[in-house]
Length: 250
Image 1 (cartoon, rainbow, N blue to C red):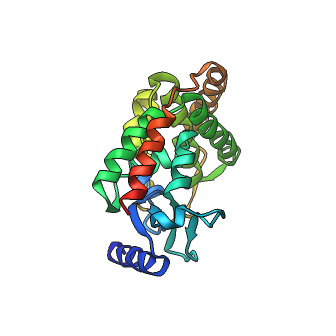
Image 2 (image 1 turned 60 degrees about the horizontal axis):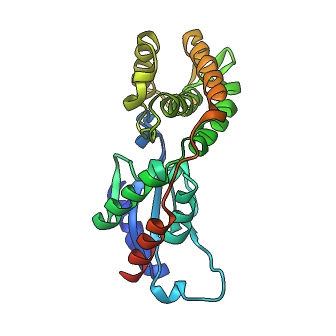
C-alpha cells in the first residue's frame, strides 16, 4: 500500500503540475490505534508555481481524490495550509508530527514545524479538541460501543487535557499523551489498543465504566479551563516570510 500511495502522489504531481512538499498518514494508523482493516488516510501539502499565485482570481486550493474502502487521499495548497496554521489549525499541527511520512521536502518540513510552534494557540486548539470530544462522548454512552468511537473520544479529550496541563501542542500519537491519565485508565487504554489491533472496525465492545467516567471528567475539566487559556502570540511576518520563500523555490 505504501508503494501505491507514493505512486499516486507522483501521479498527482504530474496531473496537477504541482510539487508535493509533504505527505503523511493522518488517521488511526498515525494516532496509534489502527484496526486490521483500517483504511489509509493520506494528507499532503503542495505548492503550485509562482505564476499560479500571481493571479487576480481565486483558484481551487485543494485536491481530493475519490475515496475507496482502503484509501482516502487529499491535500491543501501551501497558502491555504499556512492560513489555517496561523489559526492554530489542529489537523495541520497533527500532520506535521505524523510518524508515517510518505514524502517530504526536509527543508519545508523543518520550516513549517518551526512556524507551527510559533502559531500555536492553546485556546484555539482546545476549542477544536473540546468540540470533537463532546461530539464523540454521546456515542460512548451505549451498552456497546465501537472501539473506534472510544478512541476518537479518548484522543481528543486527552489532547485537550494535554493543552490544559502542559500548555504545548498535543502529540498526534495517543500513547505519548497518557501521562495526563491515571494508571488505571492508562492500563485500560493500552489494553484496548491491543484489542483494537485484532478487531475489525465494526466490532462492538461492552461499555467500559472506567473509560466513560474518565471521558466525562476530563471533558468537564477541559470545558472549565477553556475560557482562561492563552490565545497565543504568533509572528505573522515570519509566517509570510516562510510562505514567500517556499513559493519562490518552486
